[in-house]
Length: 420
Image 1 (cartoon, one colour):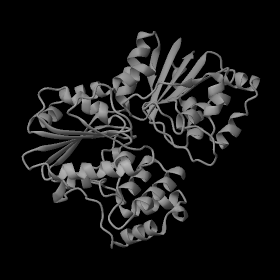
Image 2 (cartoon, rainbow, N blue to C red):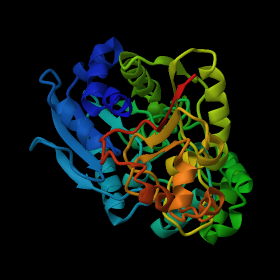
Image 3 (tube, one colour):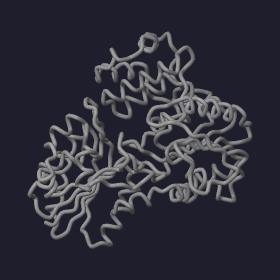
Image 4 (cartoon, rainbow, N blue to C red):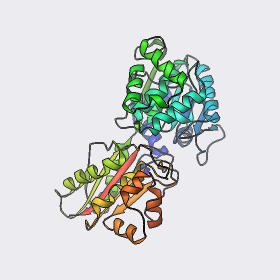
């Protein structure tokens, strides 16, 4: 079921979906294209698009953590860093801005955007240092900020995000996005380099206040945010800005597509299927038991073997020094409430194949997990969660889920199988 979910949002399938929709197909074919693909799925999406002979591609750049398989020679690849940017991310941002500025008015810049783009293409706004921006982003991330809070900060401290890449392009700009954010907000995906930014300096200040992160920021960043709130520092480009008058954007892959594909697989395997429409969000260790309660409530309305599916993206406030991620912590939070439940098994996975600081996608947990952990002398789940060391709980049990890099990213998928 998990593999079916990944296949449903693979790079080739996403590009195929773009050609199936009249609006996106028209934009890919109406003018010569300069292509910039950035994100965890960027190289794979670019490779898939370059295989479409109808598209007149003048230049193509992919920015990612690793090259895709069978990348054509016509695709320029720049490696960069995730989850925290480095000098390669700066070089990628400079190259993207340079290429965007060279697109003529009768050509189109196509941005293939996916999760991870915020770190992979990164440069500080004028007047700030790269280290200032990196330190501020890291501080808010480790304070447990959600993607909306984090990206509001990133966009306002950036030279390329929040519509600024599209603003640098004389030609038309079309963003085709693989969404990894709850709600599929195009201004949030990859920090929205090709679309207007609705967030404000006030939103940035509110996020820092909510996460009690002001004291963790470099003084120069604090000063810039104060200036922004006071109206003396420029805002990001907003809707109606003339520089973005020829920019548009579309979501071509999302978590709902992955869930739909998993549902087909579950049905074929003989399960009655239930989809929880409410997206899974919040602190992972608290969201898990709440999700389980909702999932079981829906499952018990059916008879026999039931599969409950959902999607979303939780957060982790890092206070310990262990190895883990939001999916591992989500799964671990289920160990105690599922203990002794009987015929039930659950899993949570990151569709990009990498969960937090681990090298796995997530974990599986069942009614016997807690018993097996105690037999091995592992600490209780609460203690492990306090150390943020969920990987070292599941790894000795053989209960991690390892997919390897998937070349896609639509957030997280949760699955519950239960016999009612």
